[in-house]
Length: 185
Image 1 (spheres, rainbow, N blue to C red):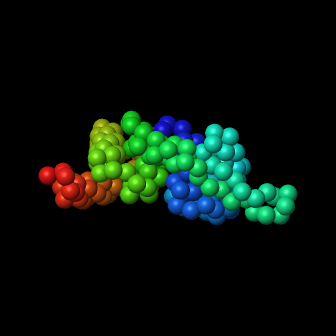
Image 2: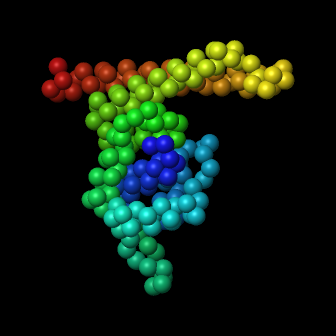
Image 3: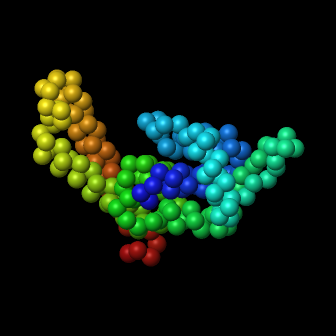
């Protein structure tokens, strides 16, 4: 899922699968999924996404603004199938920052093998990041020898290392859970 619109579509369909809701509440839930470091989802992005999802048959809308009734959006059966498709979509983009955070919030809806696959891909991505940083030696990328830029680069390394530890802990937990799943031996 290389496009941000796909990540937003995944989030919208997943939230609506939990419960039908008005645009305002949907925006709040999707923004929360995108995380505190992402820009808030604007209505200028949300409503065109909802119109596209309606046109594709993935979302239905009940009520109209003309009758002063709030529009309630619901995911349709084709929308549920599209959500499952986006959630389990194979490829390296599963581990991308935007997609991973949203996907992880819906992990309970993936089967154990897919959860392991996504976490493994995330782990590889984090290891690649650490290799890149190690090659640069935590230096200020501008070469200015500014101690604050260097400190910020070191903070970035610590952040990746922390997330890598977290990801490895999740992998261990998933493997332990997979070992106790009936029929997996």
